[in-house]
Image 1 (cartoon, chains in turn cyan, brown, blue, red):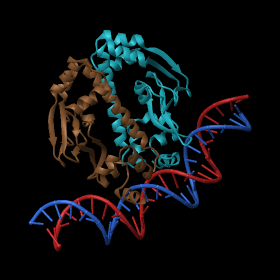
Image 2 (tube, rainbow over the protein chains, first blue to last red):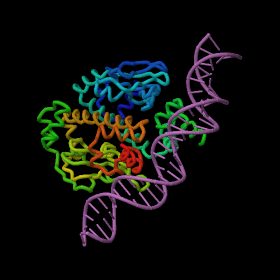
Image 3 (spheres, each protein chain N blue to C red):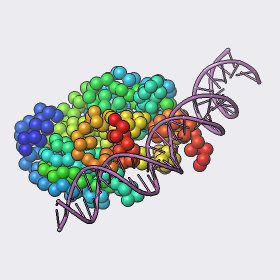
Length: 187
Length: 187
DNA sequence: CTGATTTTTTGATTTTTATCAATAGCCTTC
DNA sequence: GAAGGCTATTGATAAAAATCAAAAAATCAG
């Protein structure tokens, strides 16, 4: 529990009491490598904190899977559009290594927000950070060549390259796996 | 003021009193066509509601400008990463037609959130919608050909095509203006 | 350890799209 | 309504990356 408390406290100086209220609703979950946190078509009703592990979010297009994002230790993960709307997810999230999670259900989270506005405040701050990160990812990928995108990923998120398969990284970077393989051998 | 009230009420059944508190902090602003709401390097300290108008957000890369997004009547607009972090913006936002805005300053908004958690709740809901829209935009552009991206834009946001210049749309869709011009003449 | 399966690399070719260049259209503004 | 400045189109060529195909390397199961 310490890791998540440290991270939450970095976002705002929230009262200890509120944090305890939040932690009281968390439950631990362990996902073996290769299994899924959420599958396409299901409603995502858990927000997960990755206490340890590495996951990949992807969707299917013409039988191929296309990586949307990777998330790692210390980050929150959910199929956000499904979690927010409580409608079926179009993305699947799989554990690329064994994951130890803390989860809170959508309903519990909404109940907490009603009772304790400090928690909604904290969530707002976290959401803002995720929004900014997403916007940066979008811009980062615009008008860069395949090689530039790969080099930038090495700089910003080297863990992804270490832990994910070439094909998974390639679709994340919007290129074919052959192209990524050639870029790798050229540098 | 009616338009903004209608839109806010759609997000949550917020007390009338809270809405009035919010509206009390809004000020009107009019931006002539061609002028900017926020310029690269400035800190974005206003959140704007577009009561009527059409704006484009872009950044510069190698002297060319690259469109990040278009926003239209009924939407909120800010250089979000700058507004959230209160650090200099890397994007510029310009009025593509004369704009009538309602604005609230960052400080006023934060003060309201402290006093009235209903407003932070409302903001959270809006932010979630914007997050989902951004995620969809990101996914929408993955692994589609230039033509598919253009056709999808026609389906989802035809106003953009009507109101923006070819070069502005082209960089939004991640292609050269010549390519977009050829696609247009081919359909 | 070994055979089988999956993943990655490498090669040849084609497709897509960018770039460079020139022309045509079209608003302004005088 | 003509001159000048943008904007858009069209054409030729080059570059980037996808696709198709096969070989090599790595991983896994028994």
